[in-house]
Amino acid sequence: MKIDRLVGILAILLQKDTITAPELAERFEVSRRTINRDIESLCEAGIPICTRQGNNGGISIMEDYRIERTLLSSREMQEILAGLRGLDSVSGSRHYARLMEKLRMGSSQFVNGRDSMLIDLSSWYKESLAPKIEIIRLAIEERRLLAFTYYAPKGESDRIIEPYYLVFRWSSWYVWGWCRKRADFRLFKLNRMDHVTHFKRFSPERDVPMPDFSDERIFPGGIEVKALFAPEVKWRLVEEFGPHCFSEQEDGWLLFHCDYTNKENLIKWLMTFGDKAILLEPESIKEEVLNMAKRIAERYGGTDYGI
Image 1 (tube, rainbow, N blue to C red):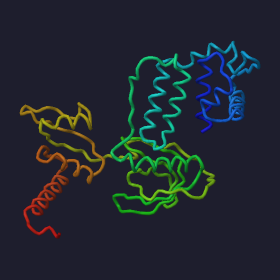
Image 2: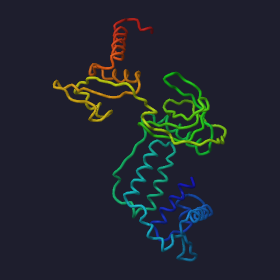
Image 3: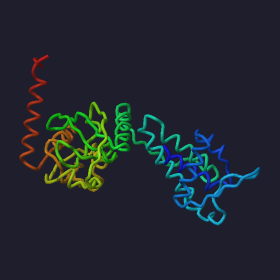
Image 4: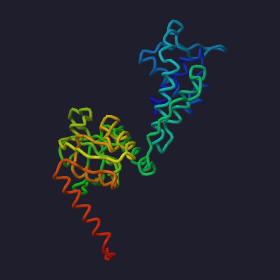
């Protein structure tokens, strides 16, 4: 992509006194004519680049602009590279890895020391996620409609959206777009999407807001939970809710308080603790958990599983 190449060329020019167009063309695997157009684009963007002919000629940033070479520190460049590695962890095309190497080549004296920050955004579903991310990214760039089957707690449905943002949030990937079925902006989780395709271009005349990531909108609360947990599951409470979500009792059990978001998810979450959790409040959900436990016991106590 042109923007990636421009960033790579700029990184090289910031670190080298002079470089020739053939050298840049070979490094970025494009023609000299393409490099010349890229240099023109950088000049139009306000970067003072000069070219000199002859044996000692080449392309460089103007001498009085050298102070700007400290625009990015070594640490900042390391953080940029770490971010690119993170994006590459979910990319099936190694697109960001190639850009990362181009930046590194242009900054060999600038980026020193070993990598100290590793970001991996992939998941157990990397093989299925990577193709979806590439399809959605292309649809966003080319302003194409996105069609898919979506699986939600209330059932599955076919959706067509105008995609605007790929989002990594709450340890998962989402796409933010205008849903033509709901006539509103929606956030769709990629793991719940199937048969993802893009087709004709769209030209919406609407203002696109940034995704609203407030917990209150996406995960509305309202369920005051009070429960006891066995000491051996303390690590899970700390990992999921932080070290201040409970108080230790004299017998070692943990008294847990939380504002939970969804009754069904709360019951499922509690069941994952087995006999290591005791729900105290609310009383109505406590009854539902007890009834579910009875139904499970009946299923496992019988011999006819309907198979």
